[in-house]
Image 1 (cartoon, rainbow, N blue to C red):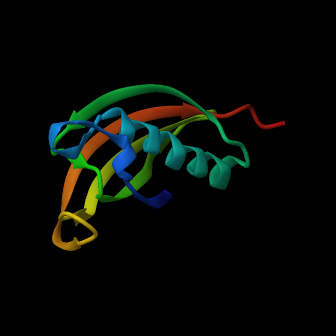
Image 2: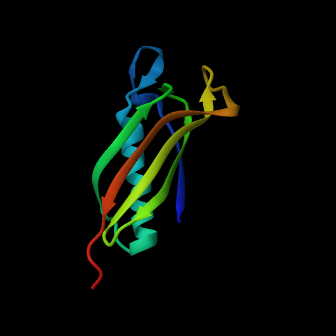
Length: 121
């Protein structure tokens, strides 16, 4: 099918909890962004997010991280697209302005969801 990937730096202004942790909703918002591009590429429309079937928070996301967000279409209906999502930490801030590119990326959040697009004219 199709896979779309975005990368995003997580600014320190998004830290909500001790240890510079970022809330899980941050990755869900990024899933919406990458799903929008999937719909644009497949259907020429931004589409609408209909539902999540499964969300798994597997590891923390911290301010200073660089996330790689992927969306892969796993099933296409007439107007619906089922998408598998992953938010993976590929770089991690390590204090001050230093950071580390991770040798082994950390899968932080996974989900599956459904988007819908308008009927073809």
